[in-house]
Image (cartoon, rainbow, N blue to C red; front, side):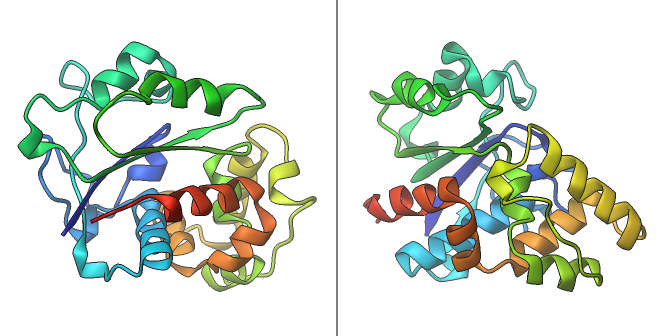
Length: 218
């Protein structure tokens, strides 16, 4: 079993159908608790390491003073190191994935990697350009399938301005899928999108896949 913890800037990436979870760190998630980030990362692990779905177990992350971390926490060295440091090795996961948005900060990825390079846990920091939603909307066929309407991007995903991908996804969801919660639209896109299309459309995603594939995971 590959035990994985995912941190992401926004609650939307981590929100599943079941939103009632408030359990101790290390507790395995149920399928209904998985958010779009979990689902996309699971597919990436299946793709890069040929790991069966049932062998990937997502777990509750560590907390900061009993609260789940938010975006700014993941960019603060003290907090990020704390969130990737397990006092008891028995509860340390096999892999930690940290998803943050670039927000036009060219040095962000290198800076965050430097914060955690000496920690014992296998960790991968990925910076989406400009935000995680750019990956979710990169596949036009997936958008058409989930939204049940053809939509088109004004420019390639990673050339969109800051927060533009978030806004487009919100607008399309309200226009074409108003009966579904935003988190559910995200989940469906994460499960439907073609990874090869994402790789071609989003260089940051392609880089993430390459670094993930290079990891030695037991």
